[in-house]
Length: 271
Image 1 (cartoon, rainbow, N blue to C red):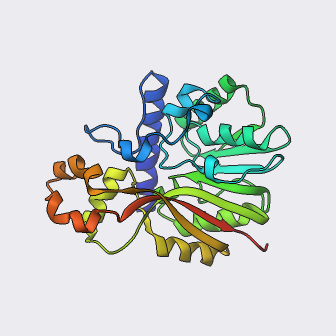
Image 2 (cartoon, helix red, strand yellow):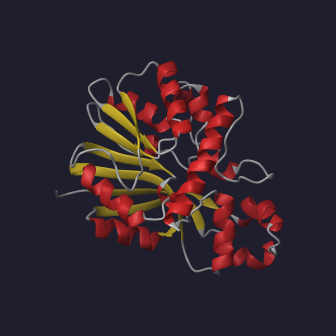
């Protein structure tokens, strides 16, 4: 099952990278004919941030948030972006930490890595390195990173416990976990949850807010907070869900306000 999910994710994001390099755009919210999921992916980066990076990096963003705007990044720090895609958050982080700092991007998709390295070249930013690998097995030493960021990628993993353990491992004592992700609140029927997650663009599925907090604590993190940044309403997903042969009005109470993008923070206080 984990391998199946991984292959689906790899194929989806590889194709998206190729679309961007041939002049198209990518979208996180929906892979259906209904187009991009604007309530999820639109207007995440302001004009000053967009001006700092190549257009292709912005087009290749599958994010549901903007971790670089919400995370406190200091000059000289080392940042790691899990599932870095076209590199937008890595390039913005590199500018924030400055020449004495460094930003790593980790991705398992060759096409995205190629696009990210081309965006790095266009941006002329030197303190960036893109690594090939899986977020469940981070190819960096213990206690080597000050901040771990991610933009709606951890929900794609079939082994979220492994991802969080690895994030804890590579962080230095005092290091911060600061990611945007999709989370859910409250109970709903499994088939409805599955359909809405298909709209959001998640392959493996989002965790409940309480589950996310519990898994972070289990990995060793402390000072855990989940702050909603965008709450999705039933009307946002109406067109997509109607196409799934679901009675949108009937399921509205199970959907409305229960899916959201959130900024998840935690701290590694000990080694």
